[in-house]
Image 1 (cartoon, rainbow, N blue to C red):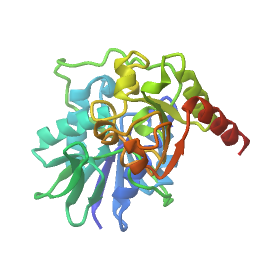
Image 2: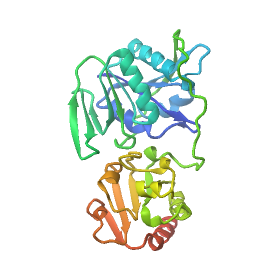
Image 3: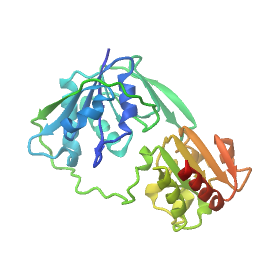
Image 4: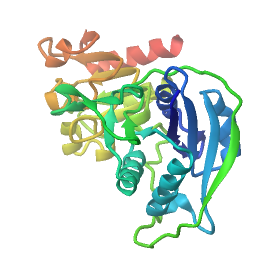
Length: 315
């Protein structure tokens, strides 16, 4: 039984659901899981306990806000990893997760694998994509302590309730003052971030205008999903870059991906190929997307999406 640590990400609603797949990977065949938060551990322990976490550690440094001090948070986290004798530290492959894990890897001189699709903690291997997702490789790691970030939603999760305890790890480390987070600006859409969404509806060039994205937004709202855009749609000014899915945008792994008016280019497919179910809507029966989807609808998205929304609402 290994001792595995997980860096937990939270937001205004508490523990992000995208952490649950990472926790399932950490549990493995009965590993001891310790969760680290830069938030209220007491408030997180109930939900984390349902996912097999035995100890929830609140990271602290007197008089400092760790959430606003990435360098200091990494120092405290590195100290905690040593204190708890961890063999692995896992986290989400998000902007925050990638940054903090990289800093901890540098501080501990330990191997780090980012954007993992699968991981074997006992064999010390990790699977990750290469060449824009065209292939994957299984990396074998050597050492005593390892770090890995896991792509959100790529690993299925299930609950494994245990009684969790909340503790505090306090560090005397001080921030060097080189980097501070002043403000985090959000889109204001109120929807889940693309990289963490379970349902995504994406529009391509045929959407025609930024105004027409409202059609996709209304459909997404019906099922609690979020909206994405192709690179062409972003380049034409129909959507902001924050909505872009693909090689030069965000990599996503939702349970359901609905592609509206997308040809299925290699660059776009690289960003969403790990989706569990792909539905394509396109007027061109020869579009490459139909060779890559689970279900295809040959038709005009402006006719199909309203019918789809109506049926989803009814069900």
